[in-house]
Image (cartoon, rainbow, N blue to C red; front, top):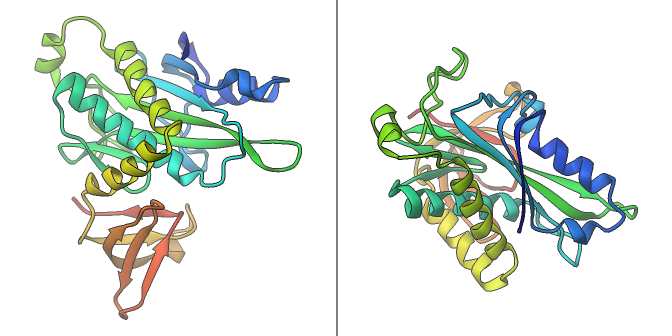
Length: 253
């Protein structure tokens, strides 16, 4: 693993994609990690701003450039979510849960977001992926628009007792776990089962937004399960069922 660290950057995903676009040998960037303590232009899905202040979290992107084209990008996000949950438990003893498809929650607050973006080859295939992960570790004053749902891994008391800066250690551990999952087919399959078991939305009523950002297309449904392809199975109020491989959901906690 090649770990590259910045104090501040525009976006670790943007830097990873820049490096991929400028490389004549995509494979040479496999298992490269771009990390930063602060992002000036961090982003989430649909180009939404991702709050990335200094001294409170760690923001990093793992580059996955396998030998063969990536066929199922949704599985990358699922593997990353499992890696984050495992690291939080191993390093901090914290039990985290997953909200499909890309959010990690602790104590009913979102503490981590994941954004996987593909790099296309000349043939139009996904030959590499930038898997971005942002974790809120220490408490911060979140902007009003996200303060109701955003949280941190550690509270003030725990943060003071943590002794030293956990940020680089946590990012490194997450990426080591993630690359191990991505490069071992059997471990990857097991991780997808773990992804489903870590979900806190099974059996819950949710609002599905099939086209992200278009609220008018939303509908209510009950979550039935998450399958081995990381698809969300839901039942609508008319009794019909759907398997969702993309989109967005919301849930009242």
